[in-house]
Length: 332
Image (cartoon, rainbow, N blue to C red; front, top):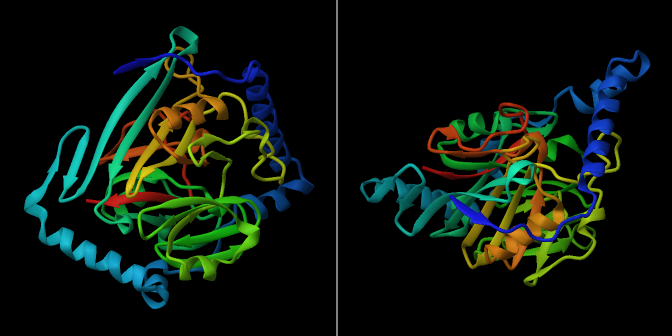
């Protein structure tokens, strides 16, 4: 366990945390309040399946990138004898994952987080999977269940694309949604990544340019090695119940250190004495300290989950996993 000093943070984070609680409570009240209940259930609870069999859809619509992934999977399967797994490491040929638990601060100011240092033999080794092998809104399953269904040795929760009907969604080299709305992260088959404005391109253009996966959440934390300004004031969605993602919260972030070299971070929170969570600025400093030159915040709060070798290794803030719509994973 590594002790670290706290980076500079929002001087009044607990006020924001209470705002998040009140907004979430407001949604719960509406759901139980007569006329609003039907609308809220339709919008946030009832599954809306657009693609029933994602695996078949990817097979039918995949690009050369998808073929590369299949070839790599076949290669990995034939190299099983070279695979090693310990309590906190995984190695298969040139792909390796090392997981470290870190803490900083003390007492009620303690922050606990998990870092997966990931070196990929090929960018397509880091794949995406949807809950129940289906694409659409409000389709959810536990991160561990989605990982297990797809043979994942390692996984983190994704961007919860299914909470909204906007954003560009490209997964495993296939376009699923083209409704540009925000700043996204594009992860390319050459092992690089960039922060981009969704409104300046299309999903098909991204696939043609070699994008393997996109994430549509945010904010972008680090771009060109520098912490992005204004990240403590960003609102990802404007539908009520999700106005603010600020304050000290559990977090999940994706960072790129170099080509095919990532750091995937899950910060626990809402648990005084173990981990209070972090602000966006603190999360950006964590990613920068880990060497990330590009970093992006994805779904957090109760969704923040890291799974490795058959078990959830962090402590999700709900007291257990919260179902989500998608994951990023490495197959074992």
